[in-house]
Length: 374
Image 1 (cartoon, rainbow, N blue to C red):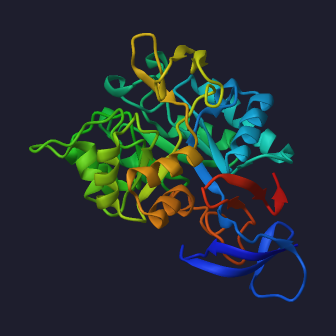
Image 2 (cartoon, one colour):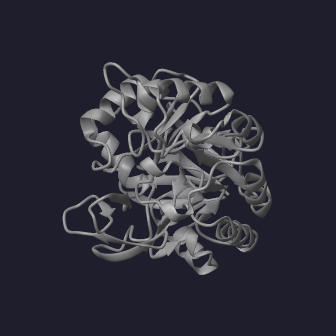
């Protein structure tokens, strides 16, 4: 298959024109070829979006531990240009998390359509009660090697990301061990700047939804936010729905993080794409109300987003973030954060043929996953 007359963003995320050959789901050549192919004139070609932190959408949630739910997610994501994702489990009993992981592994092996599962993200249970947010406090556990191994084994090595609150226990040994197997992230944490820095020195390389459910930056204490922004070893997730973080703060944050450290995530729940109503999240009732950009618990606590990466990408452009930075934060940066950047995240020879074709108004016209029209 050859895509002809493509205006695309190359591996350096610079605009280029040419033809792209695809064989067996991979990009094999980029250039100008005499052979006929699919004419993609008058369109913009970008890499498929990558969402490494998503609980659910389209009525499905990975915590259902049900293949039908995962299928709903995969199909809904593909419609919105998300070609790869990490189903994300919440704070639940270890036994339930093992079941969730095994279900995801089984589904991935059988999957033949929709957005690709590229890993599993465990947002719980190793978090802090003081910053649990919409997580269920009854199931919070102290980070320990035994439970980590149970989750990793249940995932058959598919675990890519795990969140911890480093201040809850002496977490150095846990972080050093876990970081050999996956990316370790700080989140849902009340750590101070010193505790955060120590965790980064021990191997943490990621921050779970920066600003939300963590110690803020003040002029006398950097907290997790200030410490993470100040350390170039760390990549930071951002929910860019315009509600979790206000646009002015998004702009300031991108000014600090630059084009290589921001990772846009949806953190969405099953309500994403379904409109208003009452929905379940991690065993708790949540509500999507009129003119609100996210779901909330009964007490008004922000529960999860109802957005997707495509909507956030357009938000970033509207907020004033330059196109290249916005695109990298939705594609190659999340791929790098979980060590998948050799396979996905950019248009480059040898990588998966995961593309989005946009019109000049940035509307999605076509999505290809492994070279197949989604």
